Amino acid sequence: MHPNTIYRSATSAFNLDFARHQGFGMLAVAADGAPLVSHIPFILNAAGDVADFHLVRSNPIARMGGSTAARLAVQGPHSYISPDWYGAADQVPTWNYVAVHLIGKIALRPQAELCDLLDRQSVVFEDRLAPKAPWTTAKMTPDVLDRMMRQIVPCRMNITEVLGTWKLNQNKPGPVRQSAADHVDAYGMGQETRLLAALMRGA
Image 1: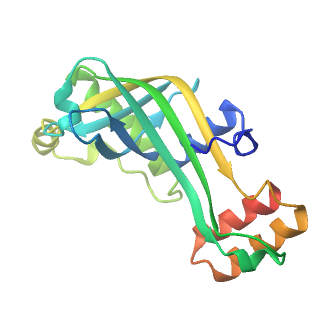
Image 2: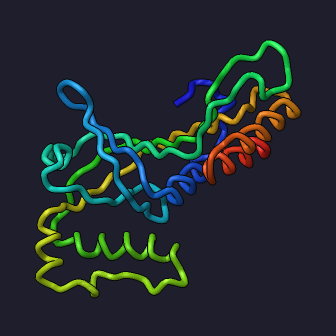
């Protein structure tokens, strides 16, 4: 997370809404040697203090057991910013980005909760595909579903801290930031950079 407070003015509620919408992040825990990292889909409860997800049973994080300190990093749009894009002298390159970190402790949940977790996850993400008829676990052959569920374990993070960085050239005058946003829009590739440009314009 960038230490400059100008990039960290978003409220916890705003950061949680962003993380909830993204629904995918990088789970990191400390371990001997290099940290352990897993890329996971997750869902947040209404209060934003619980993240539910599942891991493959063979995942080293899942094998740690107990209550483990962890950080779930959720990344948003990002892009290199060329000094030439500001239309002002004496600028240097930088990188604009959005990132939210959820910090807390994770633990395995009882296996009996797994089916409910999968149903809740699929509802969240299938709803975004409307008007497609939603997929549900009821479409699975029971034996096949049971066999697949034995390979994964339900997990929960109790969130105690929420950090967000929205680095969008807030340290630049308005016209300079707008110029950079226009170039991000023009030179970027796809929806991600268009979203970053829109965020820069509104910063």
